[in-house]
Image (cartoon, helix red, strand yellow):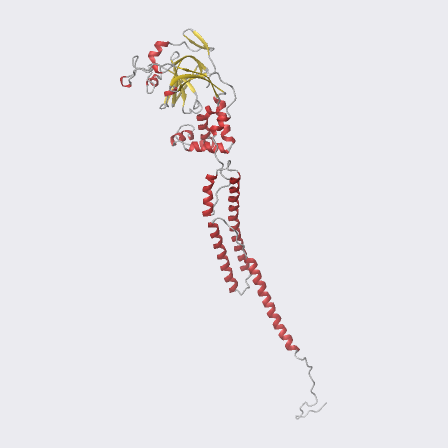
Length: 438
């Protein structure tokens, strides 16, 4: 075993270390540089990712409101997330990135919604410019101004330009069951007379034509709706309240079309072609009549209304018929217990109140011919022509504007016998009933 004394210094045991010529220092430097490069690249990648994810391209909007809305959305988004990116030294958390993308998608969805409204507005604008006869540019300008100022565009289609339903009915009349000539009173050049006219179809056919034309084209429907909306409220309510009970029920609001009903009542004659066969002047002597002294045999207007002989009208024949249509008016509601169905001559029980318009009076049948003004639901339609007994409704003849003394006419023309199945007898003469307009 060697013997080491306390004076041993280790001399002779030294070993030379290898020389690296500064390579360790270089490797350490490279490591530091690499770490910095990785950090920098991560920073740049985060920055590029941020710029990519935060980028929202602005859209072009015509509406000033949409322009302002877009600027506000983009400004708020960019400011918020630029501050977050700065605070996190370009190293946002996954949760922050997801939130940013969510808010970005919201901004884009708002842009797309505004863009879709602008696209629809532009589409309608082009349609109106390309087809000005079909679309209503004046009405559309209201919505154009709304869109430009507010960004809202409520239309789903450009407004159709209304076309006259009256002209359409006149240009395309019913060609149906032509009716026998009807004689009506008419004034021409200040002279009163009578004209024989023939219509190209029946009232039922004409009413159906009105309905068909009104519904065949939106342009006619629009014109009809405008006309109806211009009526007074009382008239409109009358057509909305189908059963005349003063209440518009849910069923009436759902099932009944008051505008079509009004059009049929007022325009069915427009849908018929009218051919005039002849016009003749009628000499009438005006009496010295005074409303203040009452109606009697010496004070009446009997001779102011021409009386025609053997008139075929309303599905029947009258031996004598006094035309009162030129001065007629709509009466107050009358309770009609019974009326005569003119085509059949049968008496019909009614017991309902309705307004009527006196059309004429037949003194040989003592029958007032009247038009029903209001529907009696399920029993009588508005526009139906009926007969009323002269005795029961003589006050209608005596009232203004008629001033007719019924008793004097009955004495002059006599009383008829009751109607028969094949016709009506007057003074022993049998006359076959005709088929007039009804």
